[in-house]
Length: 269
Image (cartoon, rainbow, N blue to C red; front, side, top):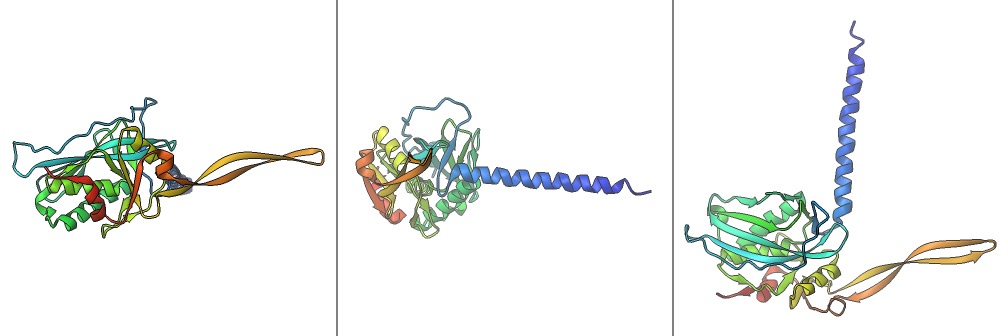
């Protein structure tokens, strides 16, 4: 009398298994696209914006007291590994200690959200400002649908500090690097295309994590040889050590932590 329940259970199991497989595929695809320690900007159409950004200066909203903004130019790579730049704006307003990301037409992936949380905590520690009475809002100005990766962590932190301390950021200085809980700057990938993107918009200085002013790139080549009657071909990757400053044509400085990076960024009003 109850034999028809067994196929229903089997279908439910298959449906659940299908959902799990789909979730795993989505995760693996995101990891493959993002790479390790990368900030990826995924565009929603085929039109790419010019690699020229407009700096948004520190502003004060006269409607409120203790409201401030700071903006910083962030180097990133697109899903094809090409360098580009975008603008991050941080707004500090009286509030309830919330850390908010403006998601209007833009999805912040989990690793980027974690960088935002870490950045706000590090900024609070460095400035000594209690954020429990502020809301910090992060907005990225870009023609994109998704931003992922932790490599903007250092820039997020610096912009937060500038907003909290009412200081201006030098728009001709750019940085790439993850941020750790203690304010140290962690390694990232794709340094060269980011440096080239910084050069393209007229930046004079590009800050990178320790030991990353040089990197190894790989050129793919095809090698063929005749073995008896057959020609055997293999694909080889040839390593090349690249000096980022010389290759991109921009001054590159290694920095260990946020405090060191701030010396290059903040401009007194």
